[in-house]
Image 1 (cartoon, rainbow, N blue to C red):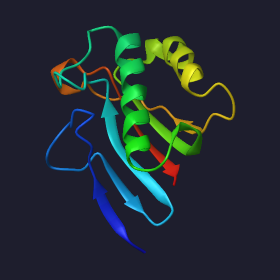
Image 2 (cartoon, rainbow, N blue to C red):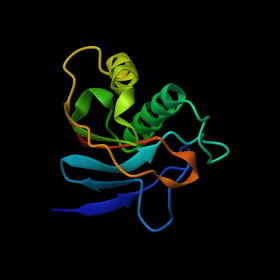
Image 3 (cartoon, rainbow, N blue to C red):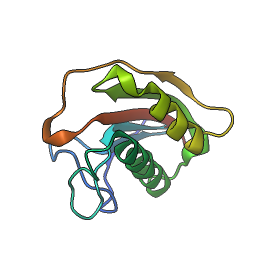
Image 4 (cartoon, helix red, strand yellow):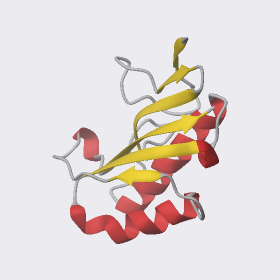
Length: 126
């Protein structure tokens, strides 16, 4: 099995320590992807819905640049700072997965740095 670290300059990197994704023979594994603006590298706003939407736009970009797409996601893990935003999350999630949504886990976590309210990692087929 081959394993390749993958990054695209079209999405701001959370850290230089780990890649945006790892590509194997059949899968692409995305690291936690927050709602960072691709140009400024900062959170889009302090609004959960804005950050969530940007988060999934970033995922879409990394997947497409890595040779996959949103319809090939089989599992997401959504890390949220507050449990009060499930309605907003489900609304935005439905925009990106209108049918055949992938499996999902959604743990609540301690606050992220830099005002990040959500981060999503996923696994997709190539």
